[in-house]
Image 1 (cartoon, helix red, strand yellow):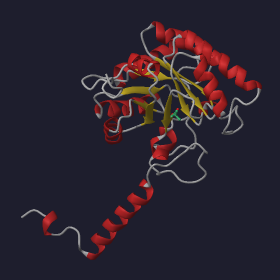
Image 2 (image 1 turned 30 degrees about the vertical axis):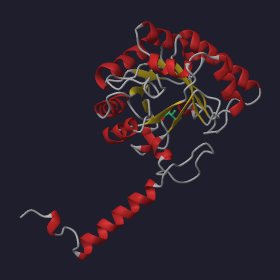
Image 3 (image 1 turned 120 degrees about the vertical axis):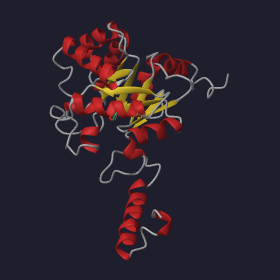
Image 4 (image 1 turned 90 degrees about the vertical axis):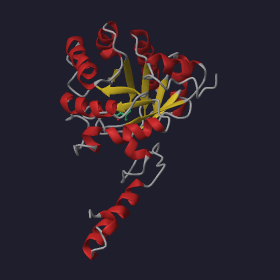
Length: 275
Ligand code: KIV
């Protein structure tokens, strides 16, 4: 069976499919998505799993960090992403404040993501400090994705968004956290903004897939924030961001042409009017 045909086209991809792809050495992709249209496009492009990330706080809702987005806001975006897809695995982020208080709160919120949002898995940030939460969710049958390295929900203790984590001794700590998360039952771990050498080391040490974002080519899978991937975001972007398009320019051109055609009466013409 070719690797492309190994992915189901008549049902949703499961965490077992992701593990199987990693076991056969196939590198797979994730993107964030927060709406029905991009979700469908990314699935069609072969993106295997979509993350309804708390980056939506900044990129959809206009906040200056990921902290303010709520469960209710993420659930409604998750519903849209599920509605736009047939086969992609949909992972919903547990936002800041929805799991830190302990396993019971975490379980209640993860259940909401599955029941109300229709997600198939959840993601949370942190290492050893969230193991009780991970164990509670896994015991309840909820697939959990971990997230180590740069964990944006901790922006206030990180002293700002310092980009690269896990250098020097912190690398041993991160590897230990990754091993503990794997033992607690996470099905994959996002590694954000860590040296490429550490990304490779963690990937080699774990059986479960690592999903890198600024963690080098040694990870089993990659994820990008979709607006970064499509060239919509501007300003000082992290080194790992590679824009694969120039959607900002494309949208600007389309909107400018529309404004101009409305102003000069070219739009709507007869072809775009009812008789
Ligand atoms: O919320 C998010 O988009 C994320 C990715 C950056 C991995 O956590």
